[in-house]
Length: 112
Image (cartoon, rainbow, N blue to C red; front, side, top):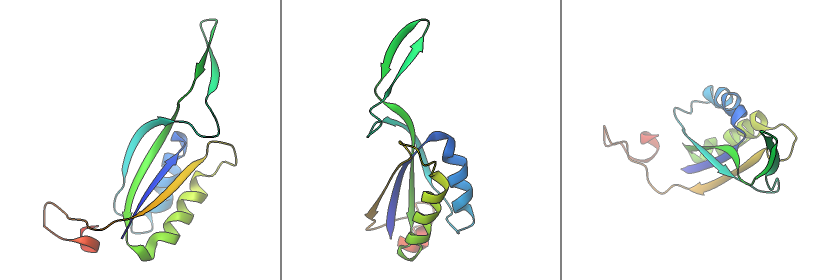
């Protein structure tokens, strides 16, 4: 099993959700986060005053999946979240040692 963590632009969330919906992925966790990478933030103007925005709003997706679904999932996220502009995001993949469905006690792949 794998845990996929993807940091994407907020307006791409619906596109990514639709892209993975048909794959049999039954759930994901979405968190609103802030951060920066190569973008390094930007300057905004508010009521005539200029100020620096160091942390940009992003969305973090966490998806647990079977190892055999990993490549297809990564392709779906990458394609749906792509704008071609700086700040499109990153995807991180880690091994998931164990999963437990609390309601039924199912373990690992059955719990996903």
